[in-house]
Length: 464
Image (cartoon, rainbow, N blue to C red; front, side, top):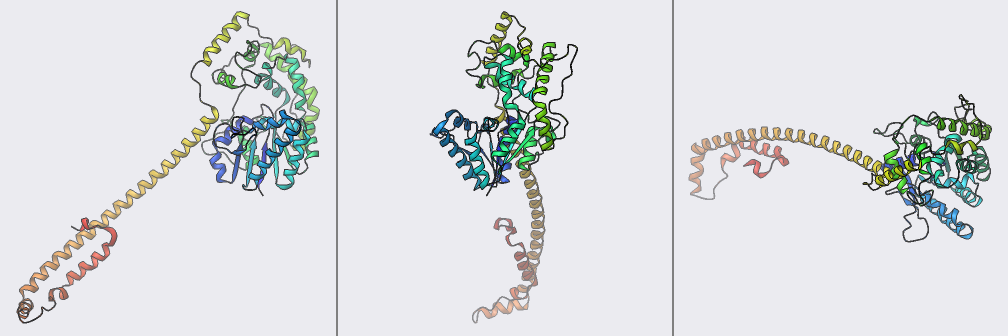
């Protein structure tokens, strides 16, 4: 009966970082009896259903679990049954089974009864832990806008207001705990000073998988999928329809742009600074009372998750309508057209490597280097042993040659003496007796012993 780790996270709360780490360390995990499952939307194996299978390559996620949410009705029930049946089948065969899917978070914050009832049933049969990472609401709402909100067609104020209802973390914690008492539902704070080693992937590995960083990993190196600068997404918001994406969650071209644009740094405008004070004031007023109760229940080492903002020179208001003005692009229409043209040119250039594949290749290269170093050490030891064997063989060969030379001298002496002449005379009268040289020569006996000592250390060619 194996343990099941579900990693739904929340949007922009480190899921991509943890999935990149899982992909890069899948071999280490497998050695520890930890099976990472994945079911990306493009791998259905000839069926209409998501098929969970041990991770092999590509993204280590199972976001196709959202198919059940979008289906609804009897189809939703069938897809959820299949999803949990597959998890349980792997849990029967593995010490730990891991399923990571950011999209899975919707079943938790919307307190989806069909999903949670099946989760409770799984929890009654196997130990189940849910790694639910949550980000301070003011930074989470901004990150959501920078990832997909600017592509929804909603105004900033409207997006933040509608997206807020998924951020009442205390309500989610209380509701899930009530409906799935057999499951360990464990919210973790996605904030650098509260994460183990200041790193989301390392925090997940240590807290839920009991794994430490490998020798080649350093804290903070596994952060993945950063957002684009706020000023840039506010400019992209006005891009022509389907110029860079076909839907708010179509990230194919956006991910390519991130590879070129996330390193853009510059001084923040006063509009951006003020907008963040507005957003923080709104989040503090809306969520912090619940956050404090959650902090007390979970023992997080902080006094506040969304502290009150610094009022700044102009004061601060928790009025989301102000965001519509502050997040309006300041560039002219001609400047925006030039930006869009430049970005199309960027997309026409060779595609950069996929981060998950790149991490996997780096891991495989490190393992190959380690194996190569081991082979070099073995080869060096074998070479030293060969030199010692050659030296031993040389000494044995010299001793043998000396003994054989002495034996030849003794043989000639015996044949020339009285015993030799007597043996030749008797040969004329009857069967030849045993050659006395063989019986009497101690040199030949010593030579025979040395031949036995050489044994398998020399070949016939060595003795010639």
